[in-house]
Image 1 (cartoon, rainbow, N blue to C red):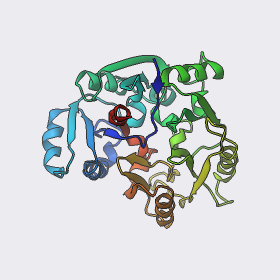
Image 2 (image 1 turned 30 degrees about the vertical axis):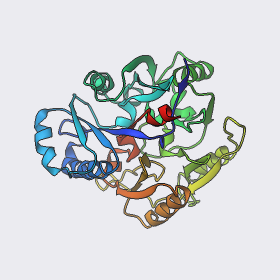
Image 3 (image 1 turned 90 degrees about the horizontal axis):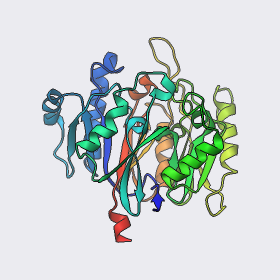
Image 4 (image 1 turned 90 degrees about the vertical axis):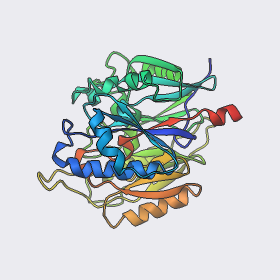
Length: 345
């Protein structure tokens, strides 16, 4: 049985989201985040379907009239949730002999920092409701979040030591055992580990999707930091140096693309620095959604991504509200790939 872990820009059947409600940590800015979700859903359904997990049928009735009749649809599924970070409680999808396999790993609230008991059931419950165009499901006794790994679609997996080797995840396993598990479960050939890179305010223990991302044409698009006075400078410069040493499965170096460093953004209530990053973008079919924050570097980030991804339309999404809960755009989403291109090949 051959497994293949597609890159995020592989053709997608849908983007999965989990709706924020009053019992989530968004309750203090609920109208703001729900407005962002409505805009996000309406943007995505111009390109592909949305799988939306909601906690009750009343939400469906309230939300439906606010959705635009786009070429694609928002499909609703009722399922309880603790929070909304679908990147980490959603499925990790691979192909096994060209058929889509829904892999359900344990989500423990980023190292038992938060209750995730309901979130950890979402993938199973959505699969049972036929949310995914897939017939095969596999549950793993292994803690893994989607935001902690990146696939280039060519056999490489990029991750961080701070997250995957953390004792608050799979403490009984050492690095070699974790590598072996990932290669077996995902079909990856080469695991690339980053030692450096972290954002203040990030609860995830340095998820790679806030730091460095694979992109088409053997690129890694990463969050730079050019301000030597910023507290992130040393770590992100060290990460940049690490990235320059990495090679793909053909032992070729990657082309590095550096994103600008956004001005520091703070929560007004407690002056906590918020983890703004441009690296937390999302590939959808024919476009890429870029988180922006209402700072002067937004325009440069749009320009950098437009140049690096000439075959994708770059669509900025204002994520000032999202980072108030210490994540960003990519963290809210999970792509579900389609097998159509594989069958064509």
